[in-house]
Length: 394
Image (cartoon, rainbow, N blue to C red):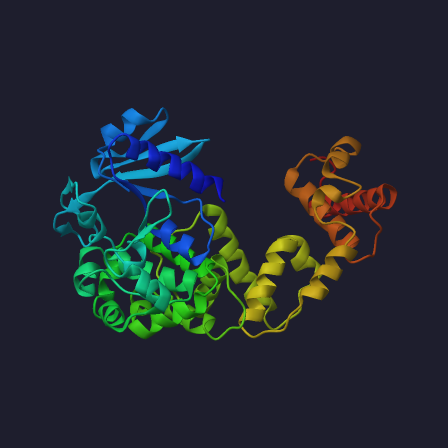
C-alpha cells in the first residue's frame, strides 16, 4: 500500500482521536477507486485551521482564510481543509465569502463534479452524498446540482470538465454538456495563466483527442483566443501531441492572439521551429540549417512538419548530424584566439568573417578539421580581407 496513503491515514486518525471528523476527499478518492496511484492527497475535516495546526508539528499556512493548511509528514505535504460554505461568487471565479461549517454535506455540495465529492475514512470506507460513485461506475462527468449555476459560479470548472475527460476518458453527462456550451463565453473571464495550466493538463493527459473534440463540440474552442484551427487539426492526428507541439501547430495554422504567455525559452523555441518549418516543409534540411539550429530544434521542427502532413526527414537529419565534423564553432581545430595570437588582426567582426569561412570549408568537406590546413586557410583569407580593405593592421 502507498506510504502516501498510510501517512494520510495517520493524519485522519490523529484528528479522529482528538474528537474531529476527517476524510480523504476529492480527486485522490476518485483515483483510488479507479486504481490510479496518486500522492496528491486532500483531507477535509470539521477541525479549524488553528485546531489542525495544534495537533501536528510541521504545518504550513497555505490558505487559512479559506480553511486550508498543509500538514507535512516525511517532507510530503497533505492539504487539510475545514468544511466550509461559500457565499455568492464574484467575477465567475471566487466566492465572495467563506465560512466554516461543522457539516460534511455543506462542504461536499459546493464542489464541482460528483466524482470529485466522494470521501473515504481511514478504514477506506467510502461515503457518497451526491451519487458520485454511481457516476464513477458509469464513467460520467456530471456537476453537483444545476450545471448552469456551477459554471456561472466558477468558470474554471468549464475547463476542468475537459481535463477530466482527457485524464479519465469519461463521457460528459448531457445536461452538463449543454451547460458547457451555453456558458462557454465565461472562459474569457479566466486569467490566461489559469487557462494555460488547464490546457497543459488537457494536452498532457492520455485522452486528449476526446477532450479536444468536446472543446469543438461545445464551442469552447471558439473562445480560446485563436487556437481553434490548431485543435481541429490535432483531433485528426493519430499521434499524441505534447502541449508545446500543439501551440507550434496552432501558431503555424493561424495568427493566434498574443495573449498567450510562454517562458522566454519556450517562446524562442516556438519562433525557431516556425522559421524552420517555413524553410524545410517542402525542402530538405541541410548541414548549414542543422549547424545553425542544432539537432534538437531541427528534430522538433521535423516532427511538426510530419504532424502537418510533410515528409519525415528524421533519419536523414540524424545521419547528417553524425557525419558533421563539427557541431559548434568551439569544435574547430583553429579558433579565433589562434588568429589573435598569430596575426595583428584585432577587429572582431573581421575575425568572425574568417571563422565563418573556416566553418563553411569544414562543413562542406573542402578542408579537414585540422589545425594546419585551417591555419593556412585562415592566413590566406586574412590576407585577402586586408588587401580588400587596404589595411595591413586592424
